[in-house]
Length: 150
View 1 (spheres, rainbow, N blue to C red):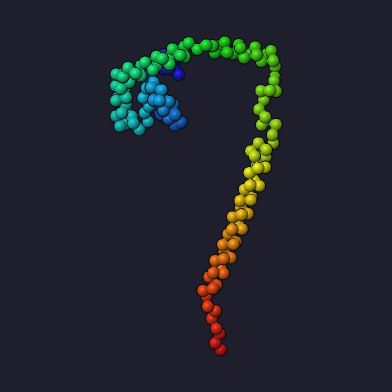
View 2 (cartoon, helix red, strand yellow):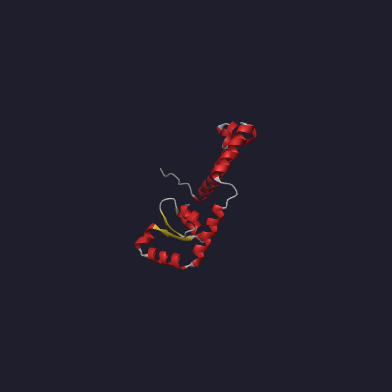
């Protein structure tokens, strides 16, 4: 965030859950994304040289910096605005989520999913029984009963 605010191209090295950030940096043309294993393979020097020599990275970073710095409203202004809004209107039920009043079964649609799931299981079990019955009858037709000899 600091690099974007300052208008500086970025070399993003991904750790743990940061691959998305590196992809975003590359997609926006703000810099280069590397994985941790790429550092050992010597790709870091190439990335540094690429970021320094390519003017597109600097232009994209400066454009983003200008956009961030010329936001229509600062964070302080937003806090004041929303605090005044909350003081004027108080707690408004129109802004509440409908799901907060639902029970567990309704919220996760279990009243819809479970009967459907039971129907599928019943149909599969019924098909299994029919197929096994047909196979048994088919196999019994090929088996010749042995006659007892006394």
